[in-house]
Image 1 (cartoon, helix red, strand yellow):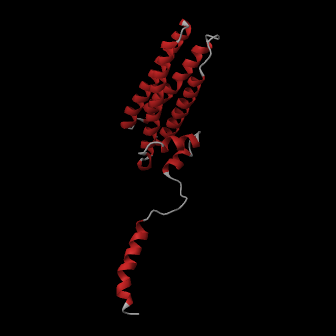
Image 2 (cartoon, one colour):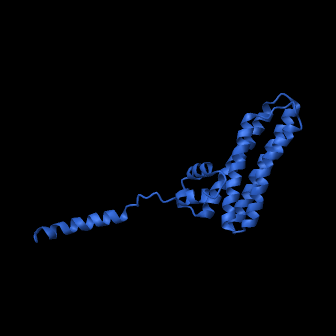
Image 3 (cartoon, one colour):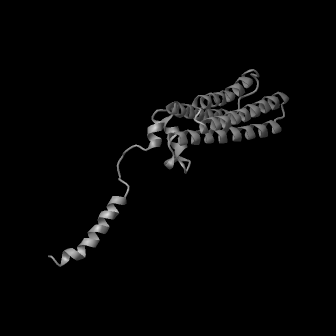
Length: 179
């Protein structure tokens, strides 16, 4: 038995080292889950934040930055989408409303960019104000369509508006955690 122990010792050391470096397989919530648990749209929050490859390494401020980047992407894409719709619209009233909507989504993107600047200097109150403003711009677009009852609000715009509002809500709720 004494002759086996010296041969097993390196193997046991290797096994111990291997087990100690493995990630524990617990059901402990991740920072994303903990953070999203404080938001209104938990499932949307988790799936949105997890879509960014940097999210597992992010702290809470990083998660708010990711949410804002996602919102910027949505606002920018929606502005481009709406501008394209305006170019193809035959009705002059629809064309004008769509152009105005494209401008509002562009404004939302700018406000979100400003919120990133505020976050980088830990000016959380200003970041909150800018994200709040960005969340309101899609509402202005919907109001413009309501002022022209004969113009139907495009379903794709309604869907994009909802996504931007959800992303902004998530960003605001995460910023609230920060300060």
